[in-house]
Image (cartoon, rainbow, N blue to C red; front, side):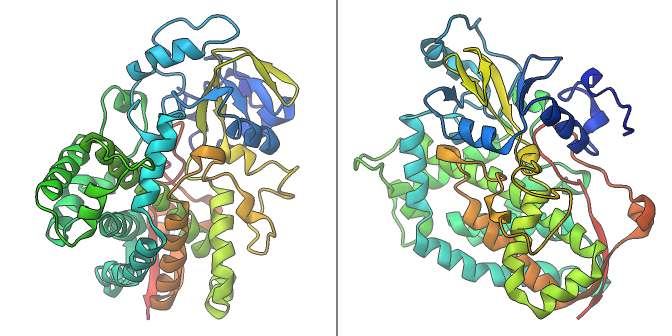
Length: 428
């Protein structure tokens, strides 16, 4: 895009112009004002770091009912007045994905997130991390001898799926069926959690709902000494046993959303490594830097461009008035490039001291509960890929020479990442 691009004429939500590189558009909005209305759908766009944190921290004035849908299909009834809280409560279930954890508000959100954290205990996460090393090696074994791979379909997609299947206790004999049903079209860029206007019309998670319902009902009838039984018998904080559907919602959300975020993280991280041989050697020689490398990968390319909120009451953020009923998009990717927080934000700096303060996992009550899982998956994947692959480089036949790379990015206004990443390497 040129310096003369008329960004105000571009529809961020409908136009593919910004799919390849949305950051000049985000910079344009922030320079105008970190909280500003875009010109096509009347969405309040939040591109400043401090302003984004303020909204994420304010669940009292901002509802998450439209967190994953944004302006489409729109709220089912007109929202008028300075306080639309009652209208949101009365009609929120008419919005797509209203049964998913990211769209819930307190107190329902508190109860269901509490249930999720009872499933993801520190002990269970440690066990899961031990399994990751073997799962990473097993996946690398499938392609290492070729000296090339398509990272998303050959490694990142199946690896993250198997990790979450292990965490949730999906029986080993069902793993291959999960991969077939959920990732059979990965090579074409499909994904369990992809968000588009069409996909939002009906839940894309029907398969997961059905299979987890079967698991939970079976374990409640016939408990076993396994993780799935622990899920089936987990209680809310008050000691009450959730309905089966409540457990299924939590498991399904983690299974779908957790994969998507980590797949994008891994594709960004390996793209950076493949373009910077000196960085590969730095991480090989000093593995302690991998932790911050993962954080900087999350900062430079947030796997989720942003989350939506709806103003319950007329309020103000950053000195800008936000009327009740306004759809707000908190753009994580823009906040992570706010120079007021991250100097020289376009530069990938593995030594950046505040990389971990990025907003790629959100902030506040809806901070991604799978963040620690994604970080562990990223760290372990980088370690094992470096252990087993030397001279990692971009496949120029697929993506073009260094001076003019060609990448195909997911065509959504929420997710950020490439559909495919073709790599070449020397097997170790």
